[in-house]
Length: 227
Image 1: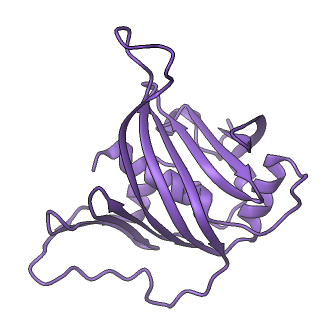
Image 2 (image 1 turned 120 degrees about the vertical axis):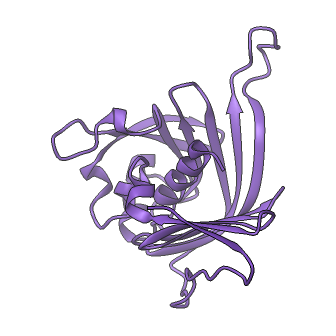
Image 3 (image 1 turned 45 degrees about the vertical axis):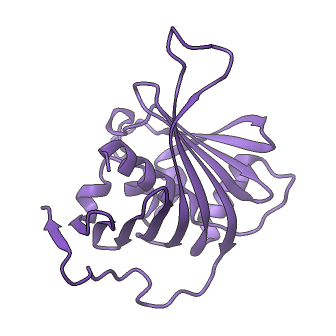
């Protein structure tokens, strides 16, 4: 899995799973504030697409081109625990247990462990998995309404206590809110590549067993530990 894709997954997981119900008439930004403030756990399904703009020799009227699509299931518990379980077209799991980040690749029979702080440092997850307010690090800017969602842009604040915008691998982070829940996330990097994630069947504040985020590699698996 590429660093960009891992960063995208982490950014996605960090932002999406933190919420409660709020008025449908509220702005997208206010819905997101309440969602982040009040949600402790969540799970649901996702479809993730990596997109790019058409090249000069390609039709320009068909929008972004899908380079890769995956789908699966997510589970999240604040702070710092999640499972991003890709099920199609291949089986991979990205697991954060609060101390370390684990990538399990079933086809390779390989588990890679790395310290969570180091692995999350360049993504929005480093800020959003913590106990602090979302708006301590980001300005929430109300965007347009499209595709049946109210979109909110997250802009890193420029101050001595927050991450500089250039520290993040994305030039744009946007969340689409609908029916009181985050339904989509767009992450754009400096090369113009876009990761679009859509969410479905979201359940909030569910009870999770204490060992839900524990991962033990199967017997015979290759284990890599990165410092």
